[in-house]
Amino acid sequence: MSRPPQRFKHVAFVAGTTPEARDAYERLQGRYGNVEPKDADVIVALGGDGLMLQTLHKFMKSGKPIYGMHRGTIGFLMNDFAVDNLVERLTAAHITVIHPLLMRARDSAGRLHEHRAINEVSLFRQTAQAAHLRILIDGQERLVELVADGVLVATPAGSTAYNLSVQGPIIPINASLLALTAISPFRPRRWRGALLPDKAKVTIEVNDADKRPVAAVADSDEVRSVRSVDIEMDRALSLNLLFDPGHSLDERILREQFGF
Image (cartoon, rainbow, N blue to C red; front, side, top):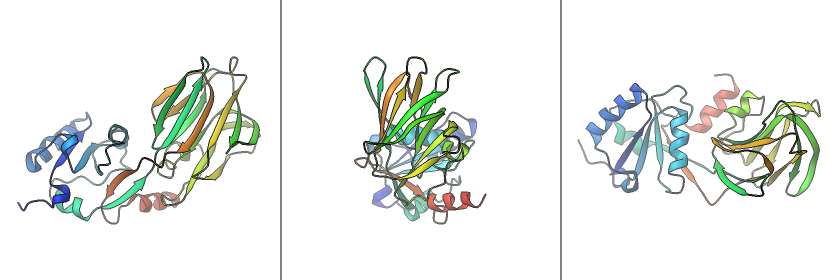
């Protein structure tokens, strides 16, 4: 086998727990070797979208490109699996750069919690009582009170995930936009959300928080009983996803808009 290009000389494989993912891990590391992620030029994730999100979070500050191969349930962020020609595929892959959201949540005890989200930051009611939420954009009040199960802010990469399931808009990956989407809104009755510039800072304040407690979740990191949440794109962090030609993330998002 010819030596891989210097750019991808050292590959680190990470895998989910399914038998398919573990089998792929053994076969690929047997063929191409395996190094620790800290020593790798590229990280190859084997699993589904859940595993990819875990990998992106774990190596968020490393700057290393990440290439996923589908060995899980949902593979929207993954490439097709194959053992052969991995070096050639990595060399030919296109890079999609995404930035995470930064969530700063203040809880009922006054503690500040910081988490980042690749897909979305969501606020949910914690009890049977509907959430009452005040929404500000760049410090200006835009909605005095949203009565709903909750609300979320999604990135373009996350717009086809939970955001889409609650009737939010699909955003092209290169669009400089965020989706602000209501979750089961009751009042205003017809308000479903808004498209915002991705430079916007969204502030959500919880009205009547003691009676109507609300949780905030950044992907899978949850903060209970929040009083206020600030959400904005963290441009200081860039995540480099690798996709095979013709199967880029922008192409997949475009296909989603036509029901594929």
